[in-house]
Image (cartoon, rainbow, N blue to C red; front, side, top):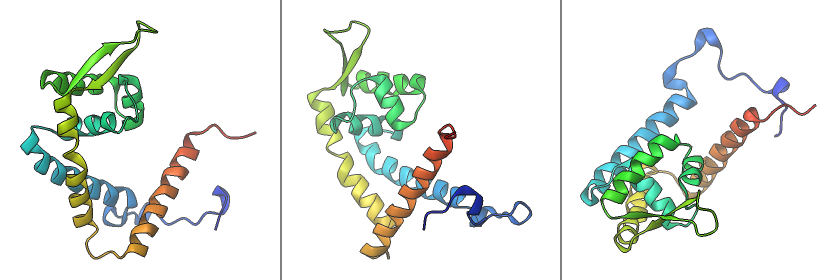
Length: 163
């Protein structure tokens, strides 16, 4: 089912574009709902989306610097620094200067940070499962595959054309 860009069907026509039929608009509404529900449940741990997401990424050991977190979460480094400042003020994260390169500052979860980070997966599982209510396993797998394909298409659009 691979098609090059020149033969791809045009699902959207400028004069007939409707937001309620827009994949982007619908995905944004779903994401907004997921984040609002997660924030509501994680407020009990004094966490906002801007805080629980980097906290969880640090717990998963996906990254350990502001730059890596910013890239991984596709967030502005300044915004990431502000979130980390709040997490540090709450005693959940600490910054440690690298012994190999003094310019590098590693982010480390405190014991309390690890404890709070363990609260995120059950909340996310509950919120996502409720958003997927009525889907069967095949539909869920198909949705994941379709979204992954859209991500890959978007990534390809950012790449310079091959000459």
